[in-house]
Every structure is written in structure tokens, then in C-alpha cells.
Length: 357
Image 1 (tube, rainbow, N blue to C red):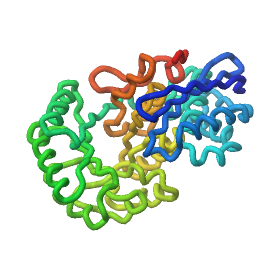
Image 2: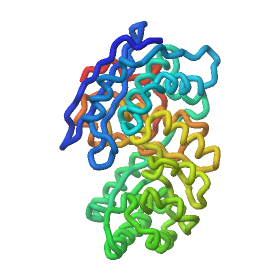
Image 3: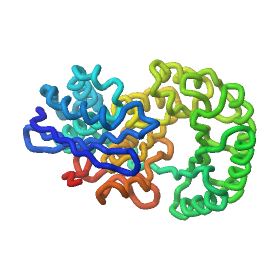
Image 4: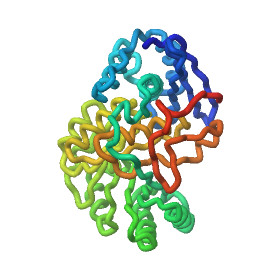
């Protein structure tokens, strides 16, 4: 398979954010889509950097091997990685651009093979659906947070992640009271917390102990990315998010006591690296969670397909529709289903085409 045409469309979103949509056309006229929408202040790359790379790199792609019928799913990832190998040095600091290229190429290969992206990447029939988790934050007033929790519960969402936004001991005490109120109203919900790397190694054990009576599944990224493997087993398990983007850290975390889950953001890791890390984590008994980066419909659809391509079902994933999608054209994301569920597209590939934004 050869890429014979590459087009890039830019879309201005809210604030300083821009989204880039990559369209690759193969030698049989199929179009594969990818998206790069880095998050300012969080992503290591910028939309300008990604745009420059995506404008020049697709033309450097050579022939791409199409896996033979019956080939193992790993053959697809191998073919894409081989095609991108000459470009690796250019892409190493541009995870959103890599995500876009890998998604577009996987979309093309999946269409060629007549498979959904998840089946092409991970094999057929392992599990059919993945639940989504809801998202709350302590940055809003408690009545508003509880109202939002009731809306999520009414939709059938059974796992809620709460971002802990307060700082200092007084702020943590306020967050703790808010979480106690949430737990009283929703005793059966799976509760997850995200400290956003705000705690020190000295603070984290004490705060995790105070949270233990609430029964959270885990606390995401309690401490700075480069320190997480030093935290060890605590009264509440913890999960790795930003740490996964630090060179050499995933390998340390696979061996670390206390690590309960890898939080996989393909927009921060690349699609294929996120998949590989999820597979390695699950092989070690560590759970996986796939989340979007509040990006656009193509990236969200690709993240959904990633969540459906792991060796076993991940925990409820951060793949719910979000307000940022309103800045994009109204495109149906076929993987998002009623009742807080994600399922594979019923079309070959990503299931979104053509791009008209």
C-alpha cells in the first residue's frame, strides 16, 4: 500500500487551542483520517510544530506492507512502525503528530482488511464493550458537583473520576469533605481520584491514608512524574498517568509495588505506544484505562478503538463525550453508544468519513 496524497486541515478551537486533521489517500482511493490536537500547557508539542511535521512527513512514507489474511494482529502495528521508522527522530517529541499519523495509517490498513481498527490492532472478539467513567472536579461548589454526579448516575455511569483541584492542607481538607459527601450520596459508585502530581512524596502517604475510608479504586498521579516509582504500596493504590511519558519510567512502574493502573492517553504517547504499554501492563496484572485529551471527534474515535483493542477489557475509560466537541463539526462518533458504553464502529476502519470540517 502506498500513500499517494496527504492533506492537512486546521481548525481553531476555544482559546489558544488548534486541531489538525490529517487525511491520507492510498493507491486504491481509500482515505484514512488522523487528528493532532495538543493541549496547550499540558502537551509537550504545539499545534504549530505538529502542523509543520504533518505537512512534510507523509510524503516521506514508502510502501506499507498490508498484513496477509490470518496474520496475527501484531503484524499491523509492525507494518506501521516499519513505515514510520525513518521518521522516528522527527516524531519523537511530537506525540500528537505521531498519534495522527498512526491513526490515519491504521484506518487505511483496517479498511483494506475489512476490519474495525480495534480488530485490526488487537484481534477479533475479545470483548464487545467498554464502559466510560464520569468526570467531576472539586474546583466547583459542592452542590454543583453533587448535581453533576446525579446526572452521571441517571445515565448509568458507574465509575466517577474526581479531579482534586485544591492545594495545601486546608484545600485537601475541603476536598476530603466534598468526597465524603459524594460517597454518602453514591455509596456504590466506583470512585477514582486524580491529584495531578500535586503532592510531595512526604505528603502522599498521609493523604492516601486519609482517603482510604472512602474506598477509591486508585489515585492517579499523586506525585511528580519522575518520582512516582518511589511511592511504593500504600493504603490506597495509585495509577500512573504523566509518568508514562517520561523516558524509562514505564519500565520502572511495571515493577513498582502499589501501581494499580496505567492511564493511557494516545495523544500524549502515540497510538501504538499506548497500545503496547496497555498490553504490557495487563500482562503484569496492572489495569489499563484509556482516556482522551479533550480533543476532537477523530482522536476520540481512535481512543475508543484503542480501548477495544487490549488483551482484556480495560476499566471504565475516560472516553465520554465532552464540551470541547462543540467546537468541531457535528460528526457522529460511531463508537459512543447510549448508557455510557463504547463499542467498535460497525464500519471498516475508524468509521468516520469523509472529513468535511
